[in-house]
Amino acid sequence: MTPVLLDCDPGHDDAVAMIYAAHHLNLCAITTVYGNQTLDHTTRNALSLCRLAGLNIPVAAGASAPLVAPPITGGAVHGKTGLDGAELPEPDRAPLDMHAVELILRTAREHKGELILAATGALTNVALALQVEPKLKEWLRGITIMGGSTGIGNVTEVAEFNIYCDPEAAEIVLRAGLPTWLVGLDVTRRVGVNKADIDSLRGGGKLARTLADLLDFFLASLKRVQGIDTASLHDPCALVPFIDPTMIDYRHTSVRIELAPGLTRGMTVAELRRLGNVPLGHMRPSAPANVHLAREPSPRLVPHILAAIREFDAAMK
Amino acid sequence: MRRKLILDVDTGTDDAVAIMLAALHPDLELIGVTTVDGNVQVQYCTDNTLRTLDFIGRGDIPVYEGLHRPLTRPDFPIPRAIKKSTGVHGLELPLPAPTSKKQNKHAVEYLIETYRAATEEIVLVPTGPLSNIAAAIALDPKFVERVPEVVLMGGAHHHGNVTPSAEFNIWADPDASASVFAAGFRKLVCVPLDATHEALVSLANVAAMEALNTPAGTAAARFIDRRIRAYDANQPMAERGAAPVHDALCVAYLVDPTVITTDFRHVAVETIGALTMGRTVVDTNFRGENPPNCHFAFHADRQKFVDMMLKTFARTA
Image (cartoon, rainbow over all chains, first blue to last red; front, side):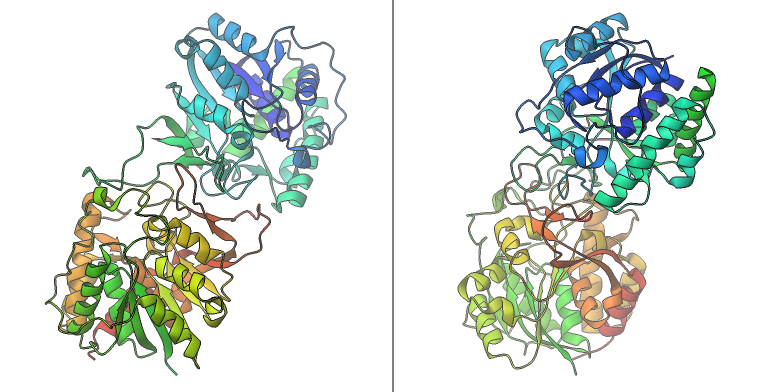
């Protein structure tokens, strides 16, 4: 089974990603980052979810603020705790007494050449890890990210939250030269659950029912804040290439992050033009392809994620 | 009653088709044409405009030459000297040299005077960089309120042409473009690449234009054939043997608004992005604080567009 480390900021959809990964992959560690709420909240949430799901895996807290950018959090959508809407168990342990970067490096060393680093929050920890230990690039099989967008923004007109949180970190990660998968808001917005989908979890045990409560809150939040009728399962999408690659089409292309402080700061700028072979002077081709960029989700993906939750929940009994 | 319009062009093969459509359509009255530095240097734009009008027997329409460079920048964001021909336009259009002459008045003066004196509505249709329009806005504080409607070709949401995120007209003079979008025109319609790339004209359509055996049919066939060959070589469309004829779509919209489908959104122009210079920043997800200011065309009706051109180019002046 593919070993995965999840670097996340739970977060309602992070919670789903955690279970999706635990069900289909070898989820071997969790690191946390600020984002959907402060680091204290996201770390506590990760530990609560681990207890709820019976995951006895290492958890370490990471960055509490971006590398350069001023901090923001996504409280409007995820609530005061970052995981509002359900009764979660108190954590039964503290995070490890090490920084997320150390846990990333330790886990990558243990699974050299095999570990997938899945990042579903701001990319601060991942960028720090790559800067601190240049060999990390050789140790990882790849990085898969939920972040960015082509065309639609959720923080600004064109920027997506995870990338916008720390654009400089995102640029460091995309330029690292690792095999990289990126699924953006334009795709994850089409991977959403409605009330009936959520209710289909209510026949299960405590974990499934708790996730249903969380998703109900998330659905109502997104409706209120963004006016959309389904709760997007953004973060689990990042795991799809290693669970069932037929569920999302990816295209290898050039993606860079706009860092200038204008209207487009934090935008993922993807090369989607078709260019011929003639050098065009001013119509310069972009830098070489560096990212597998998600383009098209399968309608089978939402049922697949829901099934994973139900099966994981059933296996816990 | 025929709709009056002024075209502001950088002729250019697609501008030339737009000019012929406006000059020959029975529902339109093209009262003047202004030229601007863009596809080619402004003196060539003027010469090409005169050639086109003479060729179809409409040398009576006055042509005014405008700005020879962007309004504030000394040059395009990537200098003109590096801008190689993509073969789409060429320097001189393949028509006989003109016999009519440009007017002895600057385009910006003409625009200001015409709108100041206007007793009927005149639609302003810019299909090149927006330098002249921004200059008119800067010179005459009442210009904006005197223009009933602006229908411009420019911008891109899902993919650019000159860069991955920007379209040429908006990019060529981003500061002027930003000023036009922010000016507060009563009605602003933007026809971007998203729409024009859906209104492709095919080699079969070109043959049908040629077969009309009229001056406009012959000229349109010549120009569009050239476009198709250049697009196939350098920026292939989803369909081979077909090319967009961007600027003419604006004119078609004046006759039949259903030739495009628009969304009313806030649109601004990025002027400082390192990767996104000249991008039209469309608030598709209502993330910004600004109210909608622009009818932005995401789609076009290819058949209606082609049929209108064929019908119009069958006419002679």
